Image 1 (cartoon, rainbow, N blue to C red):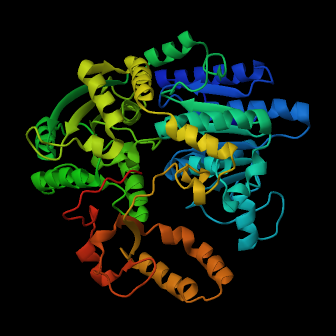
Image 2 (image 1 turned 180 degrees about the horizontal axis):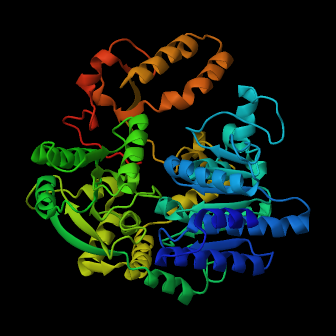
Length: 576
C-alpha cells in the first residue's frame, strides 16, 4: 500500500484546492476501510465523483489488500485492473508505471513487464523480466507470457477479463488460472451493456466463491449491482458517499429535449459561443459530428478559435496526435473548440469550460460532464444537453435511439424533460433513478440464457440446440455487421508500415512465421486501420489486398484529412 502512498507524496505534496482535499480525504478513507475490512470479504465497491481520484484510491486499496492477503497466504496475490476502453487502459497503465517507478525506485527505462503488464489488442508485444539483464523474450514467448498475464499488476480491458471468465476460446483461457486468488479492480463498470449486468454480476459472484477472487467495483455512477450488504462500500456509509457528491458543485447541466436538426443546434451554438471559453461538443453519430464540425468551420473560415474534430472516423494514429495537441493547448490556457463522438467520454483526462452533448444515457451524460471544469478551475462549468434528430418536423428520428436503442433513450429523455436543470450534487440520485428505470424495462433474458449455456457447457451452437443461446453468443462489443477494416495510407509512416506488412506478412506462406511477422508490426499496423461500412468500399479499391488498402494516390478521394473517411449517402453509428 505504501507504493501508492510514496507516489502521492512525491506527486501531490500537501493538498491545496477543494478537489485536492477531496482526493486526499477519499484516499485516506478508502485505504483505512480496506485495512479494517474482514479478510473474508470478497466484494467491494468504490463510489466517488469523476475526478475525485478513484484510480489512485482503488490502487491504494488493492495494494493494501494484497499486503494483508500475502501475510496470511505467504504469497502476494496478483492485481488485475480492468477498464472499458483501450485509450484509458493506456492512461491508467501510465499512472501504474509512475507509481512503481517512484516506489521501487526505477530511475529510468521501462518498468519490467514481470511487475506491470498492459494487455489489450493494441498493446505492445515486448516482455522484460525484473532483475535480469538479458534482452527481451522472443516474440512467441513474449506472447505467451503476456496472454497468460505473467505479471504482478496487469492493466487490461473488460473484453480480456470477461472473455476469460465467461468465454471458452483457448487464447482467452491461457490466463484463467491467473484469476485464482487475485484482486480485481473493475473501473467504470456502467459501460458494460445493461443486458449483461446479471451475467457479469453472477460470474463475479461465482469467481469469488470458487477462485477466491476479491473484486473492487469502481464507478461514479453505481449501477446497483449486488444485494444489500453483499459488497462493502470503501468510500464510506451511504451518507458519506452522498456528501462527497454534494461537496462538488463544478458543473450545471441544462437540458432542452426539444428535437432539433444538426443545423439548428450548430446555429444555436454559434449564437451562444463565447471566445473566452473552451468547448467540447459530443454527438452520437459520426455523420452528425462531421456535419456540425463543417458548419462551424465554414462559419469561422479560419478566423475563429482553434477547431478540432475527433471520432473513430479518423485513423487512431491521428486521433492520438490530436488528443495530445488538445491536452497541450488546454494546459497552456488556450480555448479550443472540439467536436467529437463518444470517443472522449470515459476517462480521457481533458478539461473544458463548457460541454454540449446530444441526448444519451444519463450515465453517459454525467460521464461527459466530468470533462467539464473537472479540476474546479472556474466557478461553474456549463453542460448543455440538446436532442438531435435526423430531419426537421415531427417525422425526425432521434439520433440517440439510433446508437443507444429505444429503452435507454426514452428513459433519458423522460428524466431530462422532468428535470431540465441539474446541479452536480444531484447527479448521483438522478443516475440511480435512471438505472432503476432502465433495469426495469430491460429484460434479463439474455444473461439468463448465457448463464444456462455455461451451466450446460454449451459453448457453441450445435444441431438440436440451434435455437438455444451458447457461451459463444457473449460479446461485450457488438461486431458491426457489414463493416470492414481498411488500411489507410495517410502519411509516409503509414506507407512504410504497409510496405513492411506486404513484404514480411502477406508474402509469407508458412502460417506460424506469418503470425510471428504480423505480431511484430501489429501495433503500428492497427494505428492506421479504420472500420468502415462495406458498401462504401465495394468495387472501388484496386487489387485484392487483405485487409483492403487505400493507397496514397487515392487517399484524397476516400479520406478527408480533417474529418476522416468520406461517408456519403450512409448513416452509420460507430461507438468507441
